[in-house]
Every structure is written in structure tokens, then in C-alpha cells.
Length: 445
Length: 167
Image (cartoon, rainbow over all chains, first blue to last red; front, side, top):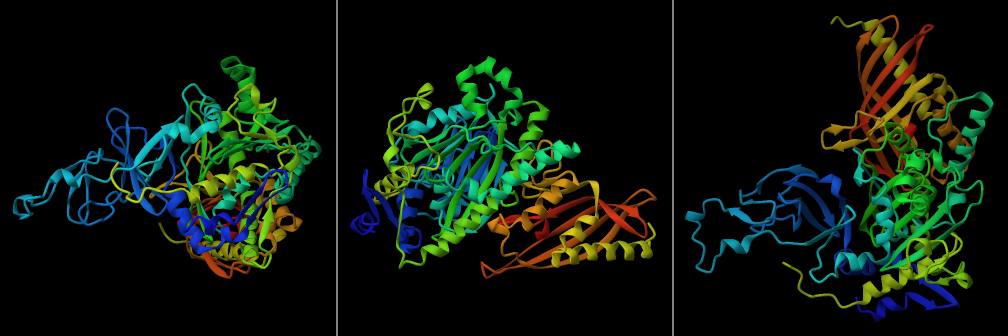
């Protein structure tokens, strides 16, 4: 898609207006370009270290449309490949995850090791290949894989920038998550996948949208209040102790962190009811007061563009997604927790996770319903533009006083979580990715 | 084990009554089937053939460990505050393969299979979940009450929403 056919869809006049044309959510040509330029051109979150901890573990997934497999070798190093036999293209690793020293293609029996090297070609002695045939030309096709703080990313773009540069200002917030235990984090058993009728970009928008919380999740917060009343009146035991940051109007805000990454935060009055909050005093002792406050007492939702949100507030969730079409999105969610936390904290974390998150929780289905209603509305293209102008006059350049305690790597700050200034960063970055020149030949690194 | 046809028929009728109450959205009557200290549990899957069996350390899709939490979900439907519950799906629950696994004067353990069909009005589509019900029933008068209902969903990619009435 030619850049000039994309650029007009984002109107960016700083201090005056910031608008996007709703065709960016519905146009099939825009969607195809997003697959090439963003999902197959950028780093994509795919897994957490704890999902393949041992030598010869593998894990399969998709990067954009492309099937990939990642593996861990004897030294703990990660490798990643297109999950397709170099012979005739059959997918080699068929399960979601496993552990094996040899990968044998079930179609014609070619064998590879988890480092991607071809070990055996069946009946090579009678193959009658031409003289130019080199067995080593048939190693699996490598992709880029790297991790930061236990979070694993992959890219099928051979010329993608280094992961640490891509993560930019998001890294300090990933550290705040990972350092909640001296032993790091682990994905808890039990993955849930759900689908919805709505463009993938709404996942990235809504994860840092402080403006929708009290309307879309009104039923959730009323239920939390009802439980408190029930506990006070009848002495009914509240086994969830839902995190409710809205009753006391605490301080909140947003930050933009570079390369499309964004964060939204709210101070949590009842943070000692959180899994980590239950251990707050020990946490202060280990990491100091400032970090402990950021980790346990301040709800944070970090979008790492384009496909994952780290939630640390209501409970702790990894939520990542992939687009199925311009109108359909598939979302994978996991509960992630500090390794070695006390049993009581672990159970509390799970109950709070199930209460709010996921397509079976009391909150996420309402978000999904709104995404889907927006997608329907976007086809009303006679009403073609929406603006992100809320908070326009109070955008702060660089870090504010709150975030300055832990980092200076912040592009903009906003003092209200309902402000929409962070979407300027989101869609400036989108436009940059969509209109950049990509390498024409994608293949081995 | 000899099959207790009488008990099997009574239990089957009880399960079909619960299914019908859900289809008719008679939530108050549905709640009356449950003990105050009850468990409504839908475990998540860990891998192709591995179900999460330890709810204190592994993820459940739904884990409601007393009747108040079932009431929360009914309240949410009635409140009108949840946009996901404004246009409720038209549902038909099918329950079959009812087998008594254990029966005593104190409790009856029952396994059954289900398919819960949903017609989603705003999405113009049909979805369904299927799988297993594992019940712990208590004798109550000339019928039963539900102490535990564990639902194993075998097609666990969720189209937008899963709630107690979806299975």
C-alpha cells in the first residue's frame, strides 16, 4: 500500500486536533499492510521463559500469519524457526509445546535438531539429487528470537532493530514486574483463548484507556461494593477482595514510552488485599519503598506494541493477541505470578484474576462487547472520523514528578488516566511503521 | 455395579430441570437448586489433554466457591449495567449420558455430558460449548440440591463470553 494512501487517515495537529479515519479499522488493504509492516515487520511477544524452562523444550505459535517454533538448547539459549519443513513445507512441530531432542517431519521423515540443523534426509543414498545439492542448505529457516526480563519476543523481519532498543522506555516497567520475586515470574498452569469481532487495534487502545473504566465496568465495581456491604451486614466472607481503585479517586495518569509502548496507572487504596500487597512489608525490605509502591500499590497496565499488555493491578495477567482479519481478533491470556510466593497470596491472586479477567470474568466480556460494537459502528463510514483530543492542553513533555522517581525514559506524561494524549503516540508510531520501507527479501538471518 | 434405575431417572429429571431453568432464564429458581456452601467450577486447560485440577495453584475459567458469588452473577444480569448481558443469547441445553458414580444417604456423585447451544442475536451466529458435568448432589426432601457442579468444557476457545448460563 502506497504511503500517501495511508497518511491522510491520521490528522495530527499538535495542540489543535488529533484524528483518525475509521477506515483504519475496516479497510482490508490497511489490514494486509499491517500484517506485513507491523506483525511481520516488528518484534511480537510470543511466550514467557517459564513456558519452556528446560533444554530441548519447544513452543509453537504464530507471528502474524507465519507458523513459528522456538526452542531452548543445552546452554539455555533460545532459537526460533519458521515451523515448516525445508523439504515440502509441512509444519514440523504439531503440538503447542513439548520436549524432544529430534524433530522429525511427519510427512517425509526429514529430521532436524532443536538448533534447526538438518540431521537426516530419509534415503539420501538413493535420492539422485543434482550435483549442486548441499544437505546443509536445508537447515530450518531462522527467525529472530530474544527475551527481556523473561518475556520472549520474536520477529520474522531479518532487519528488525535490537529488542532492547525496540522496548525503549517499557523496560523499566517490565523490570518492575519481573523483580517482584528474587526468582522472577512464572506463568501459572491454565491458558485461555478467546475471540471477538473487533479490530486488533482496540485491544491496544483499551488496555490503557482510563476513560472507559467506570462506565464499561460499572457492574464489576458495584459487585465489589455489594460484597463489602454483605461482609459488613451479614459477616459474609469475601474470598475475592476485589481491587477497587475508583472509590477514593486516587492519583492516576499515563505515560508514552517510545515505539508505541504506553502505560496507564492508578494508585490502589486497598493494595494490601493484593497477592503482592499481602507481603508488602517484606517487599519494602527487599526492594525499597519506592519500588515496592510501584510494584504493589500502583495499578499498571503496560502496552508493549503491537500485541501484548502486562496487567499488574486487579490481579496479574499477560494478554496477547493476533489479528484473524480486520474484523476478528484472537486473544490468549495467562495469569503470571512471582515464583515462590506464599500459598495464600497465590490463591488470592487467582481468585482476583478469575473474577475480573478473561471471557469468563466479570469485566472483560464488557470490553469485548464494546470493541465489537465499535467495529460495527466503524462501518458507518458516513461518520468517518474520531478524535483523541481529550486532555490535549495538559500533555506534559517528558516524565512527570511521579514517574521521575524511577525513570527519565518517558516521552510524554498525562495527569489524568482519562486523557487521550497517549493515542497520539500510538498512531504516530502506527503511521511510522505502516509507511516505512521494508526489506523486500525475507528469509534466513 | 447394579444400575439403580429409579435413582438414575430422578437424578436425570433434576439435571434436566436445571437445564430448563437456565434456558428459561429463571435465575431465582435456578439459584434455589444450590446449597449455600456450594462450588461452581469450570477449570481451564493446561495443554491438549491436561486439565487444571488444583484451583488454589492453577487457573480456573470460573471458580465460585459460595452461593453469594453465584448471586453476584445473577445480580449482574439483572442490573442492566453490563453491556455484554443486555442481549442475552437464546439457549438450549442438552444433557445426556447421565450416570450415577456413587450413591449414599449423604451424597450422590453424578457424571453427565452436555451441549449448550447459543444463538447470539447481536452477532447473528450460533455457538455452543460441549463437555462434561460432574455433580455432587445432596438428597433434599423428595429431590436434590447441588453441592458441587464442575463443568469440563472440551471446546475451550471462547467466542467473546462464557458465563454460568453458557454451559
